Length: 417
Image (cartoon, rainbow, N blue to C red; front, side):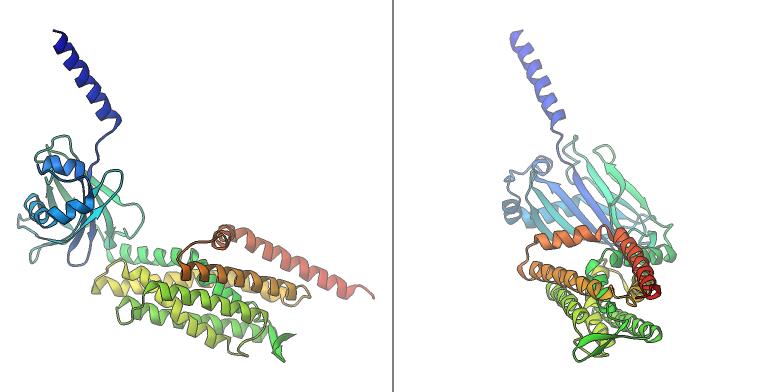
């Protein structure tokens, strides 16, 4: 009798511990591509050893080293996909990798290909990799990318949860359209440049001295409004042509460079534009400078599209939408700032403003350069990012400062000496 009571108490205690510390679930993340579906499958080892009934070590690296090849065969037996007409999809396991953490996991990258003529956006997934043996286990299925439905980045969309009683899930994403995909890449381009403080800072630094004419190696005279506007148009157009060219070449795979040299090149371009804002480097060659460095910035833009893994049909529309989004925000920023720069440029307060802007831009460039060369963040980058979060207030300060400087200049001109 005492033994039975003790056993009941232990069972209750263990049940309480299980509720307090829920066991990890498997994760299934899908990416709908043009011709196939990419899958990332994460299996927690603590659950896999029970479901597979193998004496797996707790270390993810050791598990992959000892059981990696065997695991591919096991997963292939317990993970299927079928088309609406019942035909089987081809399931290929591309890679097995360890993931260490609180609950060590094994990550498998898979490619699911539909049979000839079957739709890419409708399938039934059957996954009982662990569920066929472990009734308490669950597998969470989510969608990371679906271009035609506008799902490109951000939080994955939950599609469903598989259990031992129901380990099949019917997926229907056939309501996608070309417009949804185009709009998503348009918004992605807008967000990318709006958050790209380094890209915008390079362009704005080049525009700082557009209202001036260089003499004897320094910014000395005020240029006419017409010439100033012409220079703005030339600089913005050259930057657009430069980054649009390499964006297309990079996204199409014609040109490819590692990300780190590109990011270092962008930091150097900002440093050059800061020096040019303080004292002219290339007389009447700002457009050339914008175009040449625009080529570097375009390669960075291309990395964003390349990571989406788009197919030939969707890539053209994505290039158009992404680049258009970049240009819209770029033109908006120019339209919001340049008029006030030109207005302030006709006052005696512009020289200290321009030099201060050059110093701040140079500081940001050096901070980014050190971060990208050394591979470590620094306080300077954190400060720049903090200021960028208050861009709206900085623009308001420019507007108020320009109006106030113009008013004081006119007032001084009307006051008898």
